[in-house]
Length: 107
Image (cartoon, rainbow, N blue to C red; front, side, top):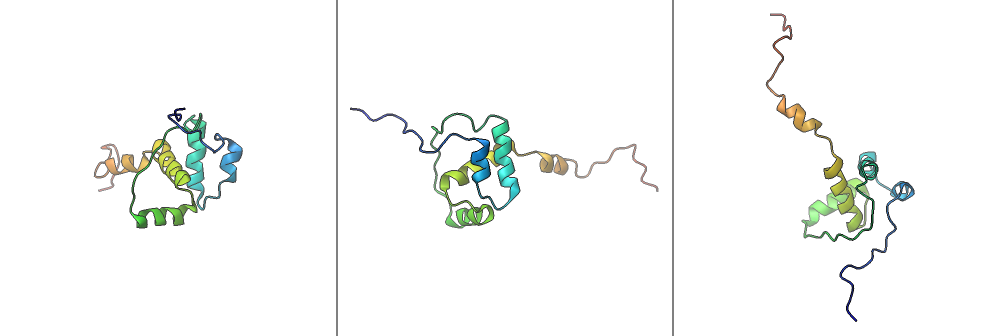
């Protein structure tokens, strides 16, 4: 008998109670997951496998900052931050060196 192409995930589907159970050190990481859930990005089964080799120092620092022990949860928070992050910093940097000609500079 052939093995299924995708193993069923042993984790429950995402829900608000699931998000509340996470013990994240900083609220912004949890907020990224809440926003991702609101946008429907956490809906459905966990069928996509994402893996890669990372520098140990990078993983250790990410775990220290978030309090996350699980590789899966760490990757999920990182992806949620990328998926729902705002572009304010990019916008602000794009404004560098510009000023509205209507602004009175008093000189």
